[in-house]
Image 1 (cartoon, rainbow, N blue to C red):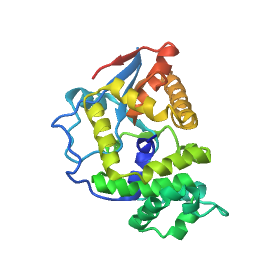
Image 2: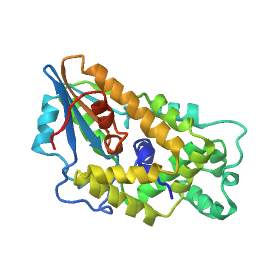
Image 3: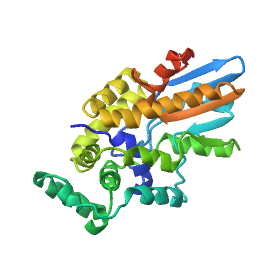
Length: 295
């Protein structure tokens, strides 16, 4: 079954507001991959993040801290303000709600309705509210059940933002909240239903998939991350093109433009965007930039 929970984990995590627990185990010391692209007066560090982590994960290294100290700015996928989520919630409501939609339970097969209704009940959100949601937004909301079961909350991005704020360094974004959600909103209904199906699947499946993803990330196993995303996206060209390839192309072009300005920047995006044949790194190399892995 196609599982793309990791693609909208950063937004779903905002909606969960739950503390992390020790349910999801992590190794003593992680060493995720880190790259740099540079010329005589510009350095861009590229760091593949994981959006949700057990709170005991140790993932920073001397090499990574050196890159942070050297960077004058942090750039992330999109800036989500956990303390004041009104901006994100407004964007979510503006795109994710619509009139005249079929009831949520009628959008899935009869065999899947009991699981969907159980997930809705567990979420605490009235079923009537789900009826006004587009399918992708309903998947966002219901996915939080699984994150809560795993005991996951914030990931790498929050730590990075806090670090740069403490150093009085600016933080930028590659996409606005509205732009990022727009990629999901443009998915065909069949792809949105795939997301919903993943959001109501068993927590045991989620735990197994998450553990594999966490293991690859902590070991810096880029090929393993690429295999996971390739497998997930192989049966859904619409999601592959909209959520991965189109965004990777946009981000690679941003990096190429930024190379024309002097200085050092840390770019932190989901690890899946920096792995595989259609990754941001592959696109940069195709355009003649030299990408060097430094961790």
